[in-house]
Image: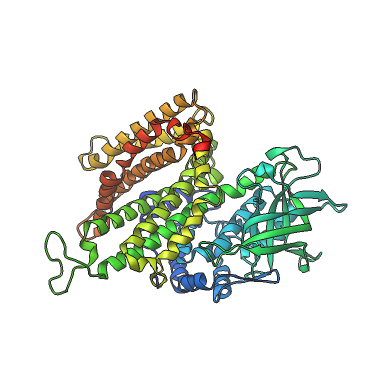
Length: 594
């Protein structure tokens, strides 16, 4: 049985002491009530919900799974009751507009809530997590009638939402999709086609599910330019807004998956289902990305969630599991052996995990705070710069956090040895659950290709150069400080390495069309580690300002940052060499030789 304790101390450090999120945001219109006290109260209440309600059913939910029978899905024991407590607490509408019943709180705070929920119960957290994207898309693109009809129910958690993109022949290449939308006389459309891999497509948590579906109009051009977005409810509404007859959309089956077994994944059949256009005709892909971009940050948070849960349980086990003796002398002479946490290999796994998790958490909060600034700040230049940072960091938050999430889950399972491989301790579930996060909402390779193929060069490098200026400002501020040299020095070296490698990549791509995609995943990791080094420099700077003799938190923060700089950041040297090897080593072998 796993345990989970919300890491509130570290969350407060990032929220208040590192970035002063309440101070930066509470002066903006709509965030006036989002002060430090409110944010702390939200975190405290969420921690209680996660620890007392959501996590106790995490392992049993995995063992029981979702049951599909006669087109309906039954959730595992306790999930309906837990979800009702979640919805009744107002958690489904934390960032949504107060105009439709939301609380209008910042995305930066919502990230921390989502991280706790994901650690407590990744499967259950996906249901309302996906609905946030539905809310975002309808808020941005829906008609007034669509907003007033659907948003209050989605925000309250009374209904939930999905995104229906993928078809069996069209995975990431959405331009190949075949689902059709035929116009009806009443302004609605008849949607026909089959979608696969639809998370939360059918379940008994709510009475209605609002599907956002990509489909083609009769006059649609070929490819991605011919895709439109439609709202298709599971249950049609009567004129008074109450639930009416069942729409012609149903789950044909559910997938039998490696992990996240309490999160249902459906094949959805649309058989002339009634739907309504959302946004402009043939602009559905752009509309769906309004939803996707929010969900990609959410999925990145899922990677951090599982990494945190795995780390906590590995630490607890390492402190109590007795095996061998410490190399530098007996640590526990009163016991038959020393706890395994004395061994360097165990320490290395735990320190690596912690150093990545804390950097990722800081980056996720900073990126979500940029999203808040891009939406609310009165200065157009600040809004644009913040939006640029969100655009640049989204593939990093999504891909790096989930790649490292899987890596950390495996490293922490290894701490348990053979006990980690069996179900009892819950570690194998974490390895299975987190694996999908590297795949859905755009595979991590696609995120990497988006970074190198689009984000870096966008508007003559505006996003990339804007981020460089942020890091260089940090280096300038701490320049000459002896207490920061062991952090700012490695950051400066890594930044120069990244800049040089980026320039090389652009030059190599001029003569090799495979260059960028061949380097993409390694480049994203190189970029990510450099970003994490920046986060650690900022965290150590803040910790040094606060450090005193009575609070070991700040001293520990500095120790973990030092580990990252000495033991993790040097990976960038090897990554630089791998990237510069170019595409030939992987492309030269003839296809027939495979």
